[in-house]
Image 1 (cartoon, protein in one colour):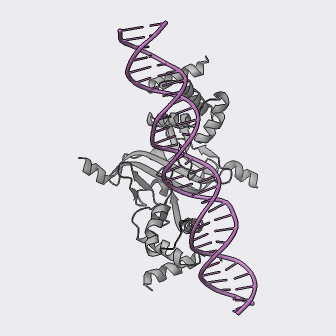
Image 2: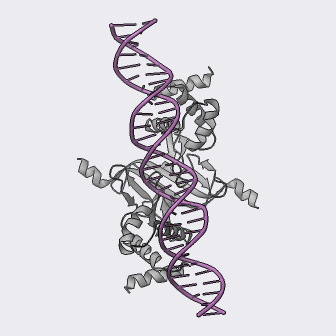
Length: 142
Length: 142
DNA sequence: TTTTGATTTGTAATGAGTACAAAAGTAGAA
DNA sequence: TTCTACTTTTGTACTCATTACAAATCAAAA
């Protein structure tokens, strides 16, 4: 068993999530992914490793991860939820041309100015989403 | 015809949207609404005034409004889109207890620090969403 | 080994939104 | 007015993401 899988196992345990094979592999997929995959995409790729896994398990697992604060839901791209590991707080940028979602560095992120109260409401979470044309598409278009 | 409807008519024309009865009534509904309704909610209420209106017309109309910059889509509450008139740029707060969506004043809004470029990407739009417990629910809970 | 509880699976259902073609409405030309 | 061309509206069927649920499987403790 690779060190990585061992690490993930320990990490999940530390978050009160029983580290089953399915959960470990989904976590591993998220860690290896540079994108911000949808549940569907995660299923498509993980099913190649675990042919018997069901889509429901992917949804269940993501739900558990979100509840334990391991994973964050992104609702930047309309109706479909994308998933991202909850690392240091950072914003996201959606390219309206190629559809890719980019991480914004924590230093540049507006969300860093996180307040715990706004206009009398208690704030638990702030999400800042930028939309436009990404660097690569800008260069390609010229 | 009330002044209000006349105003809406002129406003839609100024935005290159042909002011049909359906569009005027949907616009009127949005202006009167303090909430940030979903397409479903808009349909439910507008159909009381125009019994023959179809849900597709509501979706079509909202799409036209969004394209012309009259209305803004909010994807703060997971999978369902809420709609808001595009007034001065402002953020939104979702109460996780009662589900209401509140406007944040432009002065308090993080999105006001709007940048036109971030990490080399061209920014056309910024959305900041807060989630937590609203003032009213906080008071009620004590 | 038995028991108990958690996890996984598969299927069916829900809910939001879209596609599409027919019907109705609108405005201008003849 | 009537004809024509174009836009809007309608209704139905469909897609896609997600959830509900109950049966099956698995895992750990007694």
